[in-house]
Length: 145
Figure: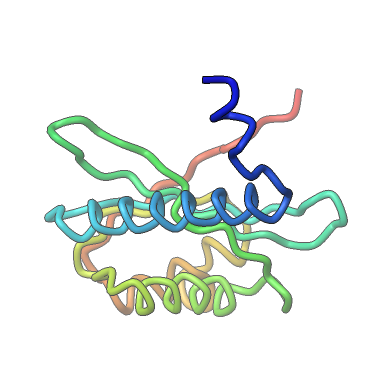
């Protein structure tokens, strides 16, 4: 058995290709589960990484075999100013690319930032145009004591 294990190629490129294949499979599975569901909700969070670049995180909640499941749907580096329009466009592009229907989105949760909560120019206003029935909630995703 140990001889068989030694014959498995473990170069850095082989490992990175396997990780990439697994991540593509996981993403496809999550997207299929969302598409099969009659509804889903998202939690949107804009943060910065270790080099102070803005990152958009979108977490999806949906039912999977009668269990509520929550997974990271999108992690996107925002290269422009963090505006409601930029955030909405990033999510919209992902939904279009993966054929996710906005009409099935029943809830959106964000923090209270202006780019997120603005009723007209913020993400909230832009999503309400596409999905007027969506429920909106405010969440303090992280706290500093």
